[in-house]
Length: 179
Image (tube, rainbow, N blue to C red):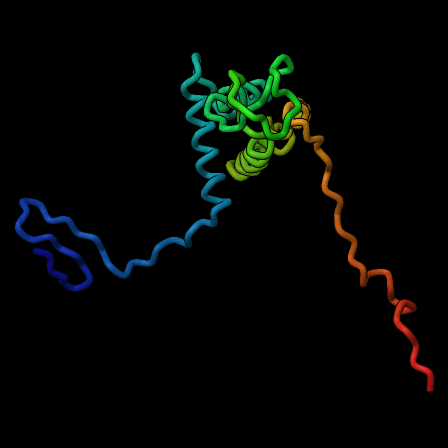
């Protein structure tokens, strides 16, 4: 039986009471991005602690980040065909093959962006940020290009859309009214 007593929830009939204060202000709820960034940061920290020998975040470098990205590939869901595979370069392969599943480039790119921000939010210096290292950018570019080739879809950088109203201050494209 449960009863409410002055803002507290009490479960009666047990040897110990479980109480939860009702009406206490909850901290602001994190956005989806902030929650994911926090999870990613915790996961990366666990990865470093589980290494032999363990590595402190302050001692982390680009090689540790590259190793982490390689470790994450085992959990990937994107089929990346090898050059010798008969489906290499086909966007929609007609059947299964033995090529491995990897992390998608877009997922890795977003992960590095979140970890780069988390590193600095947790006291790291932008100058020593291992996630901002040139080797990481090169690795991501190579992953992007190899996955695009394996799927037969070239990666094209999205062009920024130009605002058609911007730059038409003289309104010369509008007909003038004759009086």
